[in-house]
Length: 112
Ligand code: 5GP
Ligand code: ZN
Image (cartoon, rainbow, N blue to C red; front, side):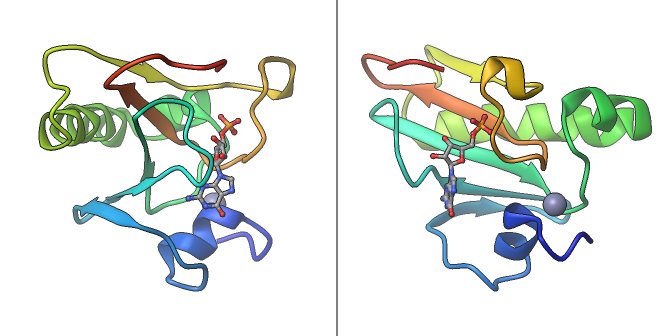
């Protein structure tokens, strides 16, 4: 794991987070600066810079990450309508280079 990766450190418990669900290979936690009433990030425990790298390296884990995002949406009460966003690359605003799925819903969604 890269020592300087924020979400590797969060997964390792070195940075506090409000965790909403965990599986063997994913962690879901509330975004520190929510852009919608429901804004949860779902990350794989293993480090991949973005969703393209993850999909190339591990298609199975990519599928489990998306399935887990759907579980999060249901658990958060927005299973009837939610958005899944993967910012991929700095030009579209990716700021943390450990792949994360934004699960958004429950009302107005700002930006992203
Ligand atoms: P990106 O712009 O890379 O797609 O999204 C990064 C997200 O991570 C942002 O929505 C930002 O608010 C969130 N974030 C950044 N630092 C932290 C942190 O330390 N803890 C949590 N829970 N979220 C963070
Ligand atoms: Zn990482």
